[in-house]
Image 1 (cartoon, rainbow over the protein chains, first blue to last red):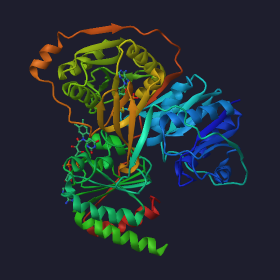
Image 2: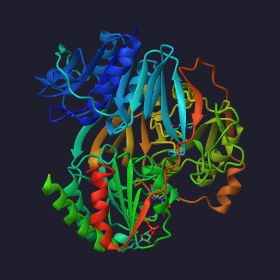
Image 3: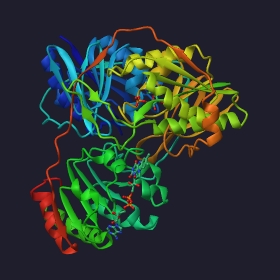
Image 4: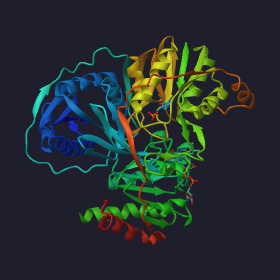
Length: 323
Length: 250
Ligand SMILES: Cc1cc2nc3c(=O)[nH]c(=O)nc-3n(C[C@H](O)[C@H](O)[C@H](O)COP(=O)(O)OP(=O)(O)OC[C@H]3O[C@@H](n4cnc5c(N)ncnc54)[C@H](O)[C@@H]3O)c2cc1C
Ligand SMILES: Nc1ncnc2c1ncn2[C@@H]1O[C@H](COP(=O)(O)O)[C@@H](O)[C@H]1O
């Protein structure tokens, strides 16, 4: 028997979608281990937070209300406290930019077994096992978590969100006290985009070298607005100054896992594929019928992107207006 | 100040990955090994800090079997002063013991700053340096694209969601991990490569600890089924319709 504790990510006092993914999978794992499902949330304005996660199966919610900006050491301290109180044997994170920073620190503090960016998790003979992509998605490693607790990060968009059910959760208040912090956050510089981060985006439209100049990314922004996507870029586009570094997808950029990835004027170099090969559906638009990206695409269009993008924006608008 | 840079040897991105005969590991025969590209940013940053007169010595440190010394030599050829080889067998999938052994070896170095890559392109864990920071009991700044080091303090700009940056002030010693944008790594010069051959490589053998996680099986992804390719902008309405009705992603 082992309890499962999931670490919520909170935005504007609401659980992020990745948190609902964790709850849905966490419930299944807790069931298989014969334990209960709990959650821990850190932030401010978390008054009714338990009610927001209870429908997904959390029976208990540890809430540290009144915490300021994210801090690695501060969050680690509070979560370690929740793990101790809960006696959790499995701690689940979302492997987005926050989880990547926090989960290993917590694992080291708890002397826990650790694996992250997992695309599958199960229980085999009472032991948690995970599957995670390695070598840029060219293979998978299957890892058995021998130690307890096990701290596991799940790749965003890899697990479906269950239908919410009824249910209530008990709230356990934790002090929102970061303790002695050695790395202090002194400022947060806002990003250029309010859209979801590439690592968590459900839809992505990316432009490559063929975008020719920064101003042309506007047509991708317009398309992204219509379908609720985040804008990405190839390294050639970033290095040419057409797009900021934060948008780069690939081996030296972000690893993404959307349901829809659209590549405009991207040739499909192995280092680009490294970042987006697990996308559920890939669309490629390229002038060159021989471009390697077509071998990975579910739907390809051989045409000029400057004609295709505005046309697509218009067609999606029509389609979405139909409801 | 003494800077230690964690350097991992990884297969070149272009490598073809094969499973071993019983699927319990990977067949590394014929792989071209390189210094992890993110670690090059870390080495470059260390060298820049030293050149600015803010550090006296740069030591590069790697954990793994004998082959990894080649990656350490690459870092020495870029300009690092010394290397430490934490000698182990092949990786068995236990990130915690890798981090623990590295942290123990760092402790013996009296480092003011530990630099590392933010991720290794083979296992993509994004984790080892954060675990090292915890084992050392120091602060961390993970995924950093700008760094200032001055008088026992570091200021680091961390890349967080959607291009936002979190600015961290950290008392040293501390751990900083590098990402693209931090700098442009230099190439090793020919004299650099010659000199690297004579630079010291200290070998340390870590105490064996129990593994908390174990690689039990390896597998390859299913091939993507061949997709459909359409000609010309006229096909846009058709593709848009398929994305909704067939792929169901809109
Ligand atoms: C160590 C290392 C790390 C790297 N990391 C990354 C990474 O993280 N991400 C990444 O993306 N790359 C990375 N690269 C670079 C990678 O190898 C490629 O150079 C890069 O992905 C190419 O970008 P691109 O497809 O935009 O440009 P190109 O390869 O130049 O392709 C442009 C494409 O646009 C098409 N085209 C031109 N005009 C039009 C038009 N009007 N309409 C439609 N199509 C058009 C062309 O046919 C061509 O296929 C890395 C390389 C190295 C060595
Ligand atoms: N075996 C190793 N030897 C030296 N450094 C390592 C090793 N494994 C990981 N690192 C460091 O930790 C960083 C992140 O690696 P990872 O957590 O494996 O993605 C790398 O870029 C290296 O700087």
